[in-house]
Length: 128
Image (cartoon, rainbow, N blue to C red; front, side):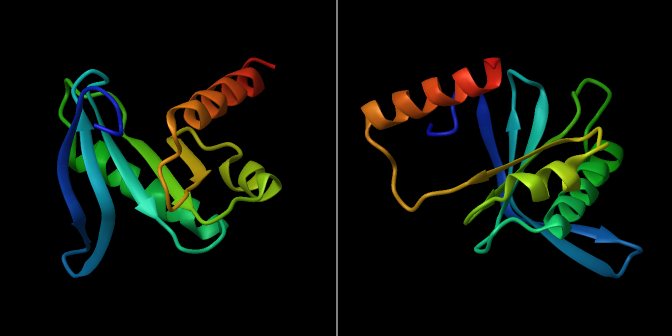
């Protein structure tokens, strides 16, 4: 419910196997029936690093090629980190066509007013 409307839980630590012997694990996988898209979430306990973007890009490419069907839209990847450095993200994401988003996470759920303020602030930044 906290993710929003239309999200269906697929699994945690969902295994991806490449070359029949190399295993990777996506922390959380959801499917959004309104977007008709898989949403992959990777949780990191450190600040954002460029290699996290490469890892998520690999997960997205795998899901786009092996899991989604012809009726699904492109897979979305979300990286939640302890912190992010905007210039690192700018260079790490530059030129990539996949839907990858990185953000800070918090250990508590903000109250309603804090959440509304944050959404309004973010919308202003995006519109500018």
